[in-house]
Structures are given as C-alpha cells and as structure tokens.
Figure 1: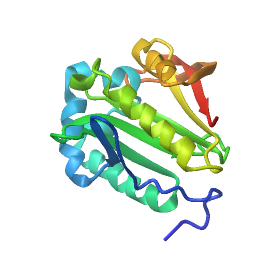
Figure 2: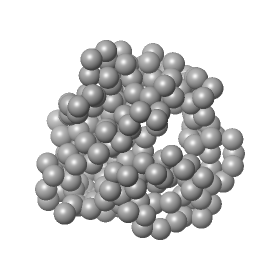
Figure 3: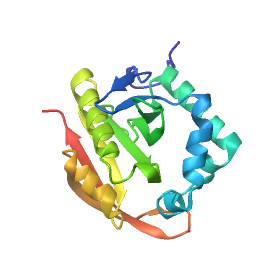
Figure 4: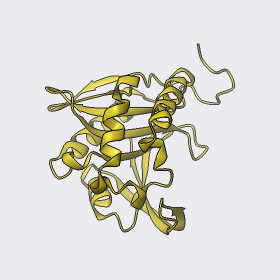
Length: 194
C-alpha cells in the first residue's frame, strides 16, 4: 500500500539496522514510555533545541507521532527511528528521517536527539554513521544526499555532524524558533554519496 500522490519512489523505511552496540529500528507504541521519560528529564533540554517539545512529553502526542511515523513508512516519506542498546534494549537516540523536505527527491533530511544518559558515549555517532551509510549505499540512485540542520549554538550537534562526515554547506540566519520562543541560526550540513 503506497501513496500514489507521493512524487518520490518509496524507500523501505521499515528497517532494522544493527551496529556494534545498537539496534536502529522504527519506533513502536511500546517505546512511547521510554521516549517520554527521556524527554521529561531536565537535562534533556528539549525546549532549548526543539520547538514542539510536547510531541515527546505528552503521552497521547508521543503515541500520535509513532502512529504518524507508521503512515510515513507506508508512504515512503518519513519515519521515526530509535537507536536502542543491543543488549538491554534501552533507548539511546531518536532520529526523524524525512524524504525530500526541501523539495529535492534525492535528499533525505535527518533530525535527532539523544537520551541524556547516552550522551558523551559515542552512541549518537555510531547510530548516525550507520544510518547515513545505509541510506547512501543501499538506496542508489534514489538517495544522493543526506542533510541535517544544527542550531549554531548547539556545539555537540555540530561536532557530531562533522565527525560523521557531514560538511557544513551554509548557515540559515534566524531560521528556527526553539521551545523557549528564541530565534536560532541554523548551520546546515550535507553528506553526499561517493
């Protein structure tokens, strides 16, 4: 079942991608509690970087974005993926994968946030590298570029992008309003297929 109105060929977003320490897979309803618990931690600082923090903190909203993600898989347009500990199953990183957000069929855009307890341990780097490699190597010729935006003041996110082979392509001044109502500049990064 695909959405015939979609201008893009569908991608198999319903993936399970193992790494050395993680399993990346689409989010399930049973993951909602772990996502919400992580988002509610004060050190998550979601309102500093994300506009609609309630989509991760409100129980019904979390279930709603997971259900919407399932529809996105069917349409081949977007998906929410979680990176979970391969041994214990603990939630580590959430990714939003969007096809053609900028109107270009060959582009995939990523957004992410990491569980506060997973930061500084290389989980986001491991997951982002595996996901980007997968998209650029397993989906030729449909995926030509993977991009991501990072708030200029979010030093860890910018460092992560660079460490995973993304190149800064420019800056968007006052392009984003965070959950505290503050305008933020965004650096935009891309990684292209070799």
